[in-house]
Image (cartoon, rainbow, N blue to C red; front, side, top):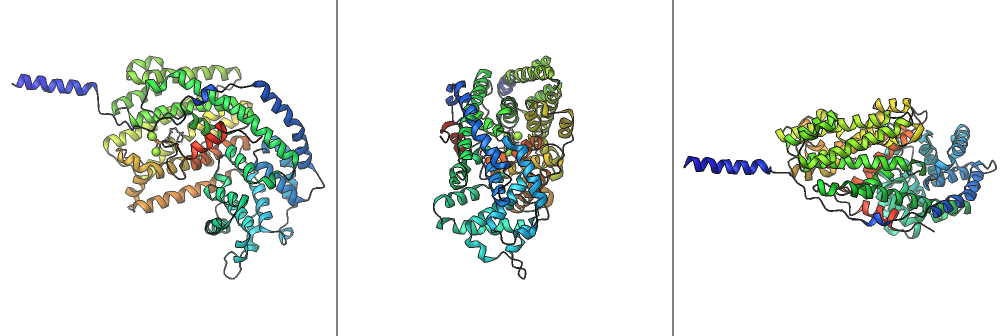
Length: 559
Ligand SMILES: CC(C)=CCC/C(C)=C/CC/C(C)=C/COP(=O)(O)OP(=O)(O)O
Ligand SMILES: [Mg+2]
Ligand SMILES: [Mg+2]
Ligand SMILES: [Mg+2]
């Protein structure tokens, strides 16, 4: 009987050896299907928009340079240009104006100025890197009780401006910490009493302040919600409309290209267990930079980030620990000869990964900038090791201490590999020095990584805990400091807020590198707010991301 028993056991073992238990997650399917494949770009239309922009662009440039314009009006113009996403067209002119206005700044001049004007001036300076003192808001506080004057609560536009200004605060700017809480509470209590565009403006800012928003979307929302400000100068209104139409054509073409590439690579067939999120990842990368000159950069960065989705879902939601060890080793070896050691199902991914990077390295070598591709590749190998570490913890049920978790977590935040991948297509601005600065793992990049890691954990830890993942920042914090789940989450949120202040500081002059190189890091942090402020907006993309994708790529641009 033993024989039968043995053979039966053998049969069972043989059977189980074929099909191990896999932690599949049954992720929600794609929202969009092949919708974006059918777009066909009319190049002549794009050229028409580009030509039509020249005249109003010249008009706006004259306005920015106009020496007779009063300084508050000039700052208001610069602020509106910035909110419409047009700063990049007039960067030198605007810097020249702000250099002068910042030098001339005198607190005395603000004694009679209203809260809204002071707020837009403050934002204009801070967004463009000038550290205007937060003392400009002191006059709105009662000296004795050190609280904000009740009188300003009736000035809704002023309160809204103060709320938006407070998002730019740095460590130690206590008045802005208070202002953020004070204005948010007051605005929430009165928003229902408001009407018209002011109601829209307050609702939008309370949903997500401009500073934490996605620049491309924020520009479209500003255009819709601030008609009065946008139509103060006809040339600006005209330029903004043409600009939105030009960008939409370019972006829909880029989205078509990456969607077609994804379909041709057949990832949904070879690795069907992954999240099918091409438009969402393209939107994420668009959030880094929307300037037309970064079109190729967006396509490259989108492809590499899509590789990360395949990798993360393979480690989290499909592969066994043995398979993860073999795949991590293969990625570290980065050699097509390693194909034979990895499971069948992941070989197409591995081959495409190596081919894509080889092609990029060849292309960039022609410009003498293959180093940016190598930096991205090394960061990719790094995150695979980071994902393996998480998988080993989960496999052994080990709960890392919070410091240990965070050391690995900054890597698995993926913001090191994504920010380096974003550099690949950016052109000659990515000098050896620029790359060396990124490789030095600067404070602002670490802050963006921390925000990515911890905000994601705060929003996905239950889902991941249910699935047996032992490595999340929440559980590591609870275990290390012996606090409740709620206290842990509150502490993580404080760390996120602190990281934002570090990012705000890192964008102020004198800067370590140009704003062009800082913007992707700032915008990566912003995209975490877009995706994870209210829920796990990436796994379940039916709310914010669906709304933004519809606004930018399905809806028509403002004519
Ligand atoms: C961590 C993070 C928000 C990264 C953002 C950058 C990015 C798009 C990375 C690609 C992998 C991915 C989609 C992770 C987020 O989902 P997840 O919750 O499954 O990530 P996790 O497995 O690292 O927790
Ligand atoms: Mg995951
Ligand atoms: Mg993961
Ligand atoms: Mg997660």
